[in-house]
Image 1 (cartoon, rainbow, N blue to C red):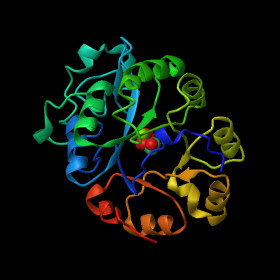
Image 2 (image 1 turned 180 degrees about the vertical axis):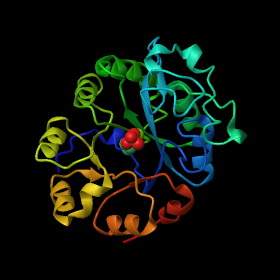
Image 3 (image 1 turned 135 degrees about the vertical axis):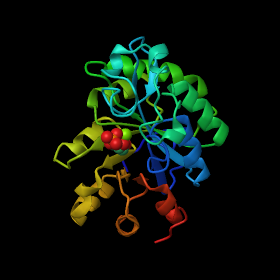
Image 4 (image 1 turned 60 degrees about the vertical axis):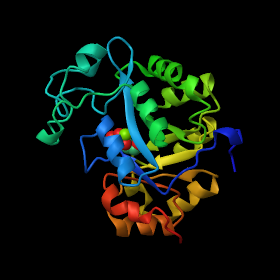
Length: 257
Ligand code: G3P
Ligand code: MG
């Protein structure tokens, strides 16, 4: 095992994690989606975090607001106030109109209330890796006690993970990858990662799973929406599954191999 994290910060990883909240059941990355995930029995959710133009960490997936709100343009041109004037619910269904873009702070507060664990994917706007991590840590570090065992950071961005390990090494980290190349395990080792979070398509080859497990990492694939695929991955040794479809996959929450 390459893991040297203090037990205090070890995540109590569930088998099923709700992608962007309850992606299939509510508008992604909104407070109502996080409440819905909890109602559907999720113990943890995955969220995407980046900065508003006034450098407040907000929960938002895309670089631009167009797909999921009634606004237009890059997120990093919107102050928090102007972002929160947008409608982040109607794109999913008019029943959710008026739903707002949440801050990370609002999300943390809700997750503590609901006892929901958080996989925080750091998704910086272009050129903002370092300042995004700094702002996220300033927001989350005061909640270390309440969030113990209930947080895992992840990122595709190596600079973000490097900054995270330098500033707050005790928060557990995961490297996100779309492809498994020879550098992945070198990076996870250098960054003292707790987990590797691969696109599940990388795991078609059983040898890939074995080599990750042999390096002492947890494996948390995204985004798996078919029960048969999820069961097969769990049988092969992955630890947790990120899914859009909590209504179906949460039936695996007590899955035993
Ligand atoms: O963290 C897993 C997954 O969310 C990564 O991809 O694009 O959905 O953020 P994406
Ligand atoms: Mg994500």
